[in-house]
Amino acid sequence: MGGGRNNRYPLLPTVFRQVYPNPPPVTGYDDSCPQPNPPLPAKSDSNVLAGVAAKLENSSSGPAYEASLSQLRRCAWLAAKESNADWAKLRRDLGKAGSDYKTLDQIDPRVDTLSYGAAPTLMSKYGF
Image 1 (spheres, helix red, strand yellow):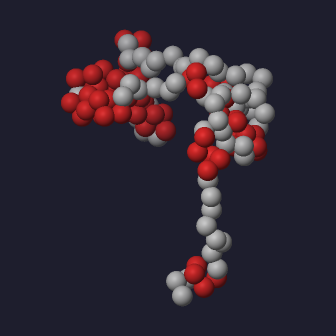
Image 2 (tube, one colour):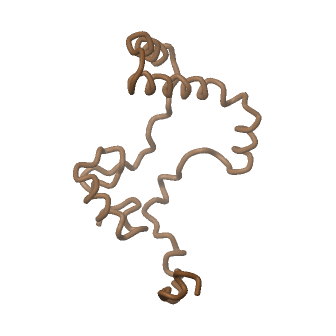
Image 3 (cartoon, helix red, strand yellow):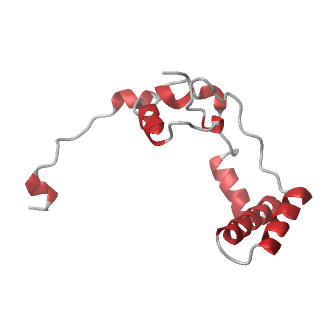
């Protein structure tokens, strides 16, 4: 297995390769294409908004319209989140947003201490 989160959860790469045989490079689960650096931050500039406006004008209904509305909401949120009191409280409580990409190769020590209870019986399954 390669680096990244693969060492933390041993079955994840197998399941991921079964579901997504050709993963995009942004996932970081493809051993031949690791992603050691964080993704670029989302942007909400005039070019993005012009693209959303064009999509809204050219789609009256359906998936394209829903996608453009979703993107428009996201752009509005990106522009307004810095002045949002709830967002500021969340960041104070949880700390800085984002992932620490330098620690992804470290195995979570809690994995070694996991223990499972007894397997359920047919009687306990149905509450008897």
